[in-house]
Image 1 (cartoon, one colour):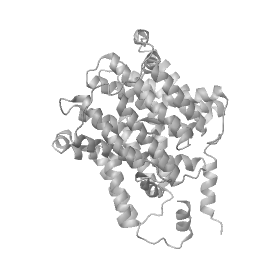
Image 2: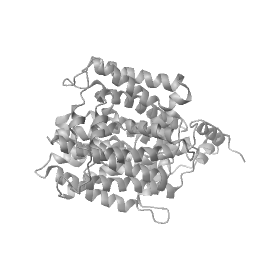
Image 3: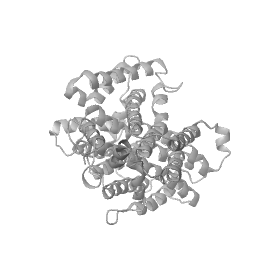
Image 4: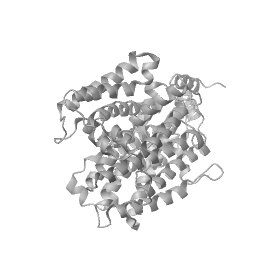
Length: 459
């Protein structure tokens, strides 16, 4: 018997991409779209600089952080695009690992050496849990939960809540910012207007370069009031090579546990976004394929911890770019991965990318984060709501959101483990949701109504 609900969903998915997941494009278009994905990784331009300055690292080491962040993300993006997941997924630096490194690195004399060493040990454990064996992995068991719309939609929304702190706040800047606040807001606003105009009225070709166009217009608007210096680019060396544990090495068991708790939601969040992209492209995402994608995330964490970078996650910015450009080709993200490796090895180009003002990049991220957040809302629209589901989602969402508003003095009085759980909405809210859904909703038998049957058939 045909399923009208499933047919309707497939029709909607088919209209998301003008260029399908397995379609190829001319090399010139791949280069432009790939570069646009590089610019879409907001954390790439924010996290290394903040971490380096927080530990008073010299400029050369901060440049090294940038290079390794680019290269680690590029390697995993290539693996996800053509070897493991085989979806147009760009893996970018994860805000959770950035926050954990920042917090743990300041907690004892070992500093970044102990932080990265503990991060490495946790990454190895997580990698072993995600190794696909006959198409399955221990951690891949989460995948069956994320196929349920109420969980996948909420996880997507919690990811956006978690990383919202690098969007609008970075767009506004701080008092020490040269363009605070008027120039920052104006330049970012120009970037957002340029992106929106190109997405809605620019035609197919302009739509495909909408992010680059917006960033270029925003940067031009910024330079009208705050000239940009290229001295740092000229003074930078040409090439950087990876080093093993460049900040030293140390391990503490409690820090390993902290990093493991941080890595788990990155995997859960990535799986939710994998399912989103697969739905957009009418791709069947089997448990084995999902497990391979999760293994890619874990492998990226090992590489990043070894070289001195951040664990990766399927980047919401780039998921937003897929929706904005309607180009779902995985060969675009393959090109993005190649560019990330090349640019990460060239310090001069790394510094050139950093010249793009942070407020402009953050303004574009604010728009793209919002697009992905509303897709989470769209997923939740498929749910047949009742008291049990309202309780599970409402309590979970406010637990995840509320942890961000605990006062600093109260937060610092708590054990480190509890601090990091509360500061990570995907951990606190996501795990709460999974538990509540299992206790309150999963045991219920689906009713025989057509809408319910359609929902369960689709997922």
